Every structure is written in structure tokens, then in C-alpha cells.
Amino acid sequence: MMIPFSEYMNEWLYGPEGYYTLYNKIGKEGDFYTAVSTSRFFGATIAHYLITLVKQEKISPYCSVVEIGAHKGYLLGDMVEWIAQEAPELLETISFAIIERQSGLQRIQKEHFKDRFGEDIELIHFSDPRQLKRKEAFMVANEIFDSFPCDLVYNGKTAVVDMKKEKHDIRFEACDDQPLNISKRYGQTKGEVARGYEAFAASVYEAAHKMVFVSFDYGDKEVRNDFSIRIYKDHEVIPLFEKGIDLKSFFKKSDITYDVNFSHLIDAFVDAGFELYAYKTQLRALVEYGLPYLIEKLAQLGNQRLYLKEINKIKTLIDPTIMGERFKLVEFHKNIG
Image (cartoon, rainbow, N blue to C red; front, side, top):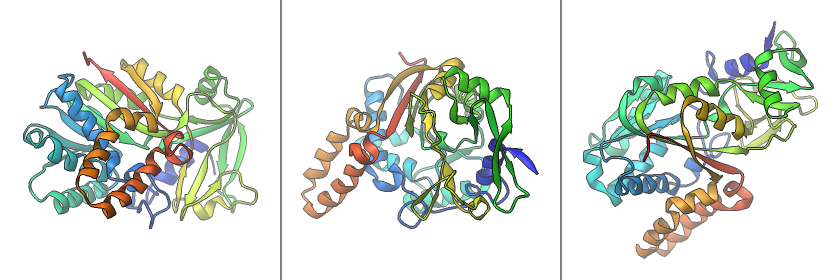
């Protein structure tokens, strides 16, 4: 059976018993690390930025704080914890929500919030951004755009996968106009073309009348004309086109990802009606969002052992050779004065 690579990747990640439909651990015991699993100060810094926007009256204290692609809910939980420390009065007015299609993950997220906050914080779930229908929203996503199914293009051809073959062979023999037209727009002759950015951006645009959308992911605005797609298994990185690879052995049992083409992503959101407010490295973004202020507060606690432990984690977030330069922030605004 021959299917387009984007369908194959969708089945891998989101099909029955797909990698993301089951609860797979992230961090030391999982297949990969994220900024969220690295340090709680990642979410705390984003929460501090939200508080700053409220103080500047760019967004009201009655907004909804919404995470998309929340996994267990750690990021949103870290944001709640920091709000409770810096501006506890906002917990009386802000509502918290997660957009999650998988009912199993919804249950896990609710359990996590209950274990962490008891009955003090109500967590609302939606399966689609358009269901939100809020006046104002602050939306955050971490590493979701690298998990959108993608097509693979190479010299005017697109990839298909022969699933009848023992190792799930990939062949470049199709001519799918949609990914090929997108690749031509960015001068791309070889690499990944994401599917679904345009539809997703349009659905997010409908979520609220006034909105700040913040997302972190790895990639660049310039295409490299090479394949970045890779598999993560037990913290080992396996290039998709590694010689002799048995794709079937990894299918649905590991993560598969690629570098985001931020030019494509930005165009999709701007075409949907958003204003591009910022595009910058994670290092610069976290510093400008207020990470130095949080580090100062940590130092004031006077616990040297805790300080050194957390500082080492924070270094991973901002070190240019680890996450600091490779990961990027993109921030979009809708009706923000």
C-alpha cells in the first residue's frame, strides 16, 4: 500500500495507538527533552510576561490563558504557580484552559491539575480552538509545529511510503501540487513541507476577539534545502534517511519530527489575519520576557543549593549551544493596542 508521507506521519503520531495518542513520557525517562521538562522557569517566565501585559493594560485580567499541545499540562501548571506567587489576585479573574483532542490526555491533564492544585484551579478543556469563543486570550504552545504531519519534497517530486515493504520504504515518485507549490514559494528543492499550518492558524484566529499567541519551536526562517526529519528514541537521534534504517520498527513507537520553516508558519498566521509581533531566539525571548527578574527572585530565597540546581537547568534553556539559539519564539497579536 502506497501512501503520501504526510499521511504516513499522521498515522505514526495520531492514528490508532499512535505515538501522541498514548501518554509517552518526556524528559529523562522519555525519548526527548523539551524546555518545559528542563525547567519550571520556562513557564514561569512566560507567566511573568503575561502579568506584564496585564499591567500594561494590553490584555485584561479577565482573559483566558490557554495552552495548545499541553502533553500532561506541566507548562500551564508552571504558569499558574508563578501567577500565584507574583500576582495572586489574577487567579480570581483569569480562566485556564487546554485545547486537546485526545480524551485520554484530557483525563491525564485534569488529574495532574488536581494533584497539583486540588480544587483551587479549574481547568477547562476544548478539542478545537474555535470552541473557545473568548473576548480575550493569551495562548501558548511549545513544540507543536514540528509535530504537524509533513510532506517530503525532492527535486520536484514528493515522497510516498510503501507500507507493504518489510521496512516501510520511502520513494520520491509522486507530484502533489500542494506541498510542491509551497516549496517553490520558499525556494525549497529538498526538505519538509508542513501540512495544516493554514487551517490551524485560521482556527486559532477565531478563538478570541483579542489575542496574544506565543509559541516556541526549533527551526529557522531560511530553508536549508536538506532533510532535517529525524526520529527520537531513548534520547537517540536517528535521521530518517539513515542507511539501512528499519522504519517499521520505529513506527508509532517513537517520536518523529523536523525543523520548522518559520517563514511558512509566519505567512500562514499573517494570512489568517494575525500581526507578527516578534520572531527571535529563545535566549533573547526569555531574557526580554523577564527571566533575569525571576533569577533575582530565586537568589533572594537564600538557598544556595536550590539556586545552583535551578541555575544549571536555566542554562540549558538559554545556552546558545543547546536551546538558546536553536529554538525560536514567534509571537502573534490580534487586536492588541
